[in-house]
Length: 421
Ligand code: LLP
Image (cartoon, rainbow, N blue to C red; front, side):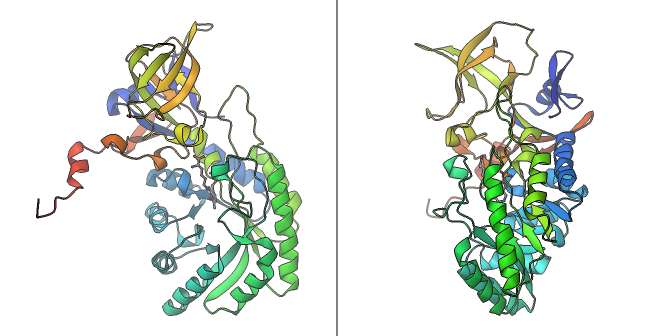
């Protein structure tokens, strides 16, 4: 459920008309709903209660500092994968003891940044990383709390580009070698082993792969304890999928996911962390665009929008589906027409949807891409020198621009001309 609904014949974000935002900030833009994010965050905290837990929002899915502050104020932790994301979490006022640092290639500078600014734990992904972190922590005279990410070799049954839990993926250490790696971690100075981390992929639409992975983590917890390690925390990653095609998709709910966690690892006496991104932010955001032209091609009609693949890359990168709806509510049983929905970028890959059945729309009309809150704005680029588009946050009946559209001067001034030219 989200808070983008038609009211009085026009699409609203909570109590704000999308058309009103468009008139103020211009198109295209992203708009996020505070109520939807809040609701989704609470679904997870309720699903995990009464287990001791922390829901760490995966910043990579939507990293605007105002969004992070919204979630941080509710008590959320943050899952970061770069120094930049760490600084965003801190800028949002999230204390270090609620920030976990994931990622397969943390640099020594990033480790130093987090150890100095405060960190809940590092999720270490390899032996070389373990040694580097030990060195950095020792040189700073501090102890780094760590979990080690294990790769359980489980098929997440999701798009191959976002599956992370198979042995051929670059992530984590092979679960079969965990005993050796934990033994090394226990020997190294400057590290305190506190738990186990696992994350098998994103946009999972079934619970069964989670179940396989978490049962392996439960076994490993018992084994490592028997080998003398103190395991008090399990980070179970993110990945719960969302319905992108509302008419025919119904992925498992956070309550089912919470019940699965309780069933598989709930009796180990561990504090549970999860790192959901998409389920909190995905359906809390839409991308609004304007139709520049309706073009009649040889064998199909094109809707040419003022948004493009640089603004929302998921369809061209993963073949992802996003529902597209007109901002003005179409009458019930209004006639529809098939369109290829495209952007102005100069490549055929700049296609949002092919043969999409849409109510009759015309030049100048606004349309909205649903489920665009996660991996939308954060993956945008300035390809074709198209400025990054604004982000807007709605809360009840008011809205604020939380990232402004840059001017062309700002963009051009970032380039510098060498003195020989
Ligand atoms: N934790 C770790 C270690 C991750 O790598 C990810 C996502 C998450 C948590 C959050 O997963 P979520 O709950 O959002 O599924 N750009 C792709 C998705 C990439 C996901 C990368 N890792 C897309 O647009 O579908």
